Length: 150
Image (cartoon, rainbow, N blue to C red; front, side, top):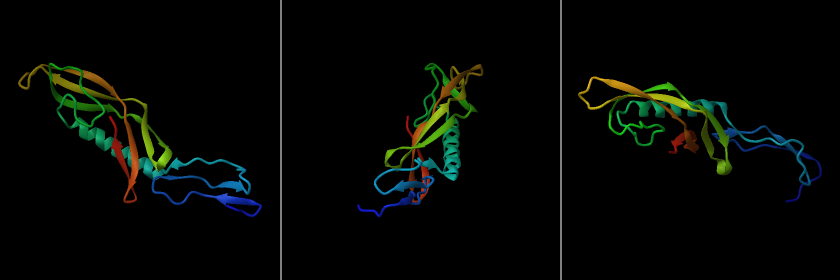
């Protein structure tokens, strides 16, 4: 590619998940300032809501190890009566290669599980379970779609 001498303002094309500040590039390859892509604020809020909804859906189940969920009870000799989310994990969203956004926990979430020995038992106890979120976000029909990875 041939370019006339001078400085050029370079921007990323419009993307539904991320954006970057324009940067200045000079003909010949020098870059005055480097700007990395960042997840858009509206996408960040949307993903945080999707993650909370996913965790809340998991907490509604009465399984020891709910499928496609970030937590599980350690007791094998008990029946789960209820899950309660005490604290949601803090999330870090980063743009990675291929235009995918990765989602990781920067701080763990905490859930408690109420257990009984049998479904008819009235004596219960609770276990505290720390959990993390790992997943990816892709643009599907122009909207952010979170996929949980266990």
